[in-house]
Length: 407
Image (cartoon, rainbow, N blue to C red):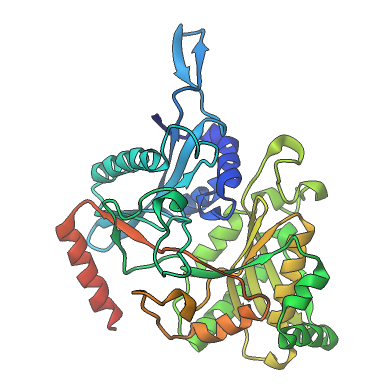
């Protein structure tokens, strides 16, 4: 095995590998790394390749290792997060991603990840970071409420890692199967959800998809006003305005008004021309009487779509705009070839907290009821784990977080 760091001209190789091995890991997409750089964070793309794939380099009369999606064993987008007091940590969101082609080979999955983690650990110490945080795409054992055994989990997460009390990505979510027909999707909904969708249609709620004109200042400002209102009303902390703007700007450059995409190329699946796949952002708005009353940011990557951010107005709640908005997003994702739709975060269910996992009742209850109206098929991840490089600073950081959360 050999460690490689990816260069700018290897974007297609990277995205092809990620989508082929875990299309739900949009947080590992090449464009997500570019977005992180645009908000001021340092990133690193590291991979493990199989030494068996080599080619002659005639110019240097030597052997070099060929990097392709076919010989990659694992890949990890790692982001450096700055903390107060000039401290920092590394974060690998929904990663590392492990190749499924080599599961039955002599190379064990745990060996591949250990090899990759050792490289990241070395980089972390060179960067003087406190720890590495990961929340890998490993599902929780539903019956036992614990991580699955090594044979099913791809690698031994308990090795050298400490369970983190600070989750960044949602541990629990709902995944909608978009391979079902529109009629089947409607049938699986709760009756009240179907009724609210039809009600919004009768009331004249209009859905706007800004895909072809992002970034659009007017549409974005309407979205941001709703984010501020929703944050105050539901008492949750949102990202700053620049974060959302940079996300839409970074993940929709292929869709400027002067350069609209080929209709057959919107999804970016590998079966389409140029074999290119990219992470794409869309801003959806729901309007009623010429006023924006709900707005969502949706991302698509490979055959996977995720409802990432949403906001709504307290005004005109009786027209049920969020229901029609969500339904339009689902239908658009289905039409463009997506096979799965992730609602991105729900309150932890009783089924997934039978063991030591602590259930927290909070403002997620209403959001969870809304999302479960569309489907009730849950996916539960094992959550975040930390690999500590500096124990003294790590514990000081945990104390700082506890004190800050009191206020």
